[in-house]
Image 1 (cartoon, rainbow, N blue to C red):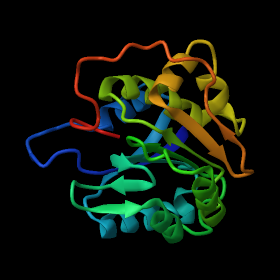
Image 2: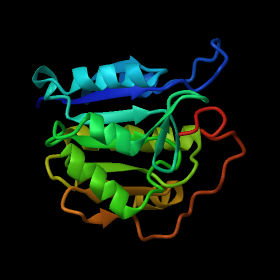
Image 3: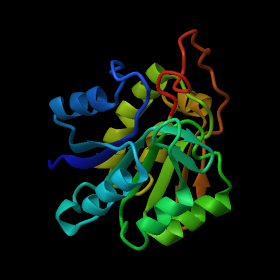
Image 4: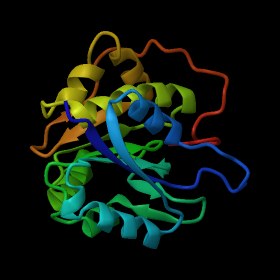
Length: 213
C-alpha cells in the first residue's frame, strides 16, 4: 500500500539556538515504520512560511495531502517565533483555492480556539477538506503521542472522517478531549469528542514554554 505523504512546516520553538526540540523525530518514526513519507521545512518568518506553502501546493507535491503546521500558536494565529506571527486568515488568503483534498493539521496550542465561522471561512477560501487541531495549551509529550497516531490516520485514512473515527474511539477520545482536539470539515460540520477527559495533568512544561503548540 502506498504510504501517505505529509508536508510539515515547523516554526521556531526557542530563542536559544542550542535547544533541539522538534517534531522531526515523530515524522521520522512514522517513516521508519513504513507509515508515511514526509517533507519537513523550518520557517522563522512570514516570507519563509509563504515560500514553502507555495512550493508544497505545486502539482508535483499533490500526494503530500496532509499539511502539518508545527509551531507556537494562539487563537486564530500561528506564531513562527516569539515576535513574528501570522493570522489564519492571512494563511488562507495565501493558499486560496489551492488546497482541494488537503487535510490541514495545526499542531499548535489553542489555534483552533477560534469561532466555527472563522474556521469555515478558512476552509471556504482554501478549498481544504478539513482542518483540525487543539483549542487549549498542550503538553509536548502528550500531544506528540496523540499526533503520532493522528498523522498516520490523516495520511492514510481513506474515509474523509477517518481522524474523527479513530480519535473518537474509546481508546483515544479521553486524550483527544483532554487536549481540546477538534475537527472542522469543508461541508461545515464540526466535531469534538464528547467524553470527559480522564488524563491527569503532567508536571512537565507544556508547549507553551518548551514547545507550545
